[in-house]
Amino acid sequence: MALRRQVFAAGSWGAEWHPDFVPREGELVMRQHWASSGFANTDLDMLLKQHRVQKIVLIGMKANTCVDTTARFGQELGYHVTLIRDAIGAFNWDEMRATFDINAPAYAHAVLTTDEFLTMLGKRTHEMTP
Image (cartoon, rainbow, N blue to C red; front, side, top):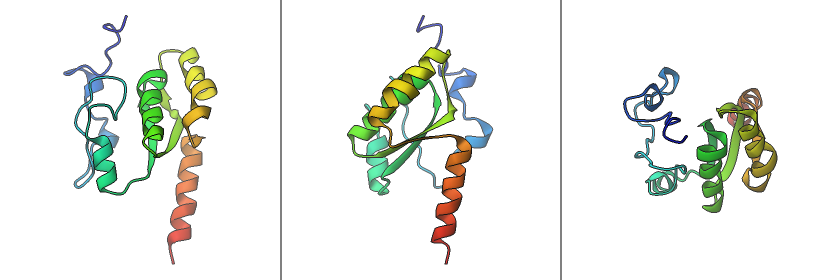
């Protein structure tokens, strides 16, 4: 089953950057990871700490494995974790329920929709503008 669902296998569409998310000049890009967590055996924690990042916002695939594991690991490392509910995918609704209804309350500081997150960012940006 896992072999059939290698949605991020090298050379597949899942291994390519979505055109809207291609890294821009100067943005941080961690080296590739090999399992579920974006932190385990990668330079992500080091990169974030070097740039004094304290909050992480997670989107992507797959809710109950990669996103869940990265979020838990991030929380263990001391990051403020936000999940964007409608920008996280899975193969079925049970996987989504496991993440958002059972697991996330134990580690996530916030679970927001994209609109809620953008509204929050807009308010914060406006508050910071003199």
